[in-house]
Image 1 (tube, helix red, strand yellow):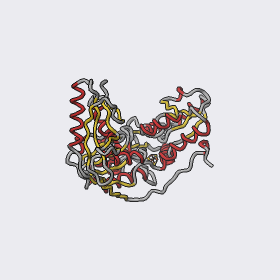
Image 2 (cartoon, helix red, strand yellow; image 1 turned 90 degrees about the horizontal axis):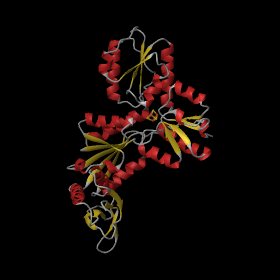
Image 3 (cartoon, protein in one colour; image 1 turned 90 degrees about the vertical axis):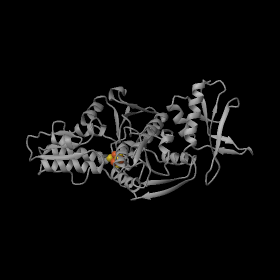
Image 4 (tube, helix red, strand yellow; image 1 turned 135 degrees about the horizontal axis):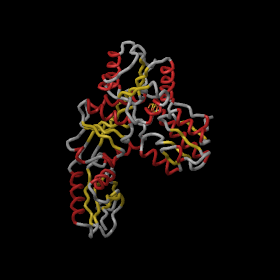
Length: 399
Ligand code: SF4
């Protein structure tokens, strides 16, 4: 038996049950180090290594149970990992950035799939990830959503949901050819960019789209006017542009870019094309902008910034990059289990935020896990309040 049990609870000398909230972090680190680990309670025949963690509330513990017949190299690794976590026990402050977590577009898209499952039953097909978050996708899959990369994977006549990132007209045409029942969860702020792309292209402009190659939103927007749109990612790309009529150039941006970097790119475009025209209101959406501003309100004071989000979440990755540009060490995590003990060495102040596609309960999970290492003082830093809500598309059962 080579599996280590990371204790979620243990008994104190008076037989009282003590929680071990840091268990997900310890288990994650064990698995990354090649030690099979599950969270649970100690099997009776195992050896147990556990300590009490000083907290400012209920008692907490930290420990592992190791089977007697485990391979010695795994036992050594397990002890090594546990020692790493014991070395970072101590009090901390969490600076909690706000706004964070779900935006109105993500909220709407997730609700669209939930309602489709409720009203139409399983399976409901979803083209691409409905939003870029492994936890959201996993939960909807458990409820009966089937995620596909290509519409050809959807049986003719079935229901398909288009993701929050939008689709090109070619995808809509393909859905019609396959007689699919479409529910469009494209965020209205992405649809706004699509409308601008069509309008700018229709007036004969070359449309420079600032965005990331291969991102689904960019592919959808490019598909609105493929012959008129050219993609640039950075200032160097702007220098390489060759546009036949420099007097007829417009720009658009992906909705989830970093505001500071995009300003540099647009300034470079304006320097090369003085007649450059752009959208009436910024394409970088309110949610991306707000999460970046709230991150800036915590990054300078933090020893470490943790951004909850998945690797393919553009706005989450931008938050990590922004924190690093402020000179603060920052990491992207899907949840508490991604946190490494080494990151916390000498760290007393943690800046914490979540990208627009990451559920708020993951934030609670990270705070709870950190509380398993000692007292945590949570200080909210809210830079603005978000009240925007989008109505559901009628095909999703909006009333
Ligand atoms: S991040 Fe912005 S564009 Fe993307 S879904 Fe949210 S509100 Fe819409």
